[in-house]
Length: 243
Figure 1 (tube, helix red, strand yellow):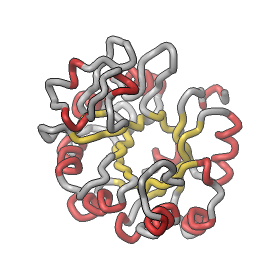
Figure 2 (cartoon, one colour; figure 1 turned 180 degrees about the vertical axis):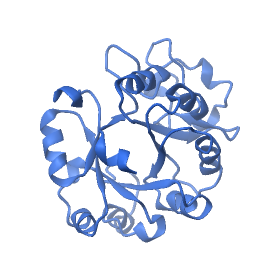
Figure 3 (cartoon, one colour; figure 1 turned 135 degrees about the horizontal axis):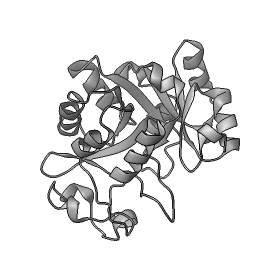
Figure 4 (cartoon, helix red, strand yellow; figure 1 turned 90 degrees about the horizontal axis):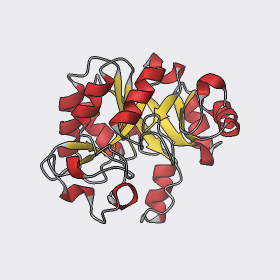
């Protein structure tokens, strides 16, 4: 997993607000690929069992259609245009084909349910990917699924403040404090930089657990992140230029 620690990772590809390819689009992945940055992308499950590259539960923010992504299928999402562009929602397989093994890929598995169908769909795609690849999730049981079913796949345990999520205080605190790393047994931890420094994260890092901070959006945030992390996920900046 050297690549996860050596090169900043492009959050949802290289995208720009108000111009350029939208987030999680094939164009954004091509831009990151051509610039030599590893690609971070999000996947959710469609009703036909395929993995779509999309972050939100609802299509509204990026397509203008007020509908849950889970009600779409592999055929219908190709008609959903992203942010008024010519780009549509890709399947994971399409995204991996575009990246083509030229740069590594970090896949966030968005599943807050019992693991199985989405993880199976993701694994079937990454098994044929010709380049380095890792998975990560806020759901430690999703990463636990990969630990059992595909132990050679590099796993990351995501966490942060869990703001805006409907969780009871005990569960929120357990997730924030990374109390379930014994379930995921990750190769790295990904943590929201807004909540760093944080004692449980620092303790894991002292014991040799790499930490990747997310999401850096300015040079100031990059400097702060590198005080507490081994690498970072970025957007709207150019790490190669230091800006």
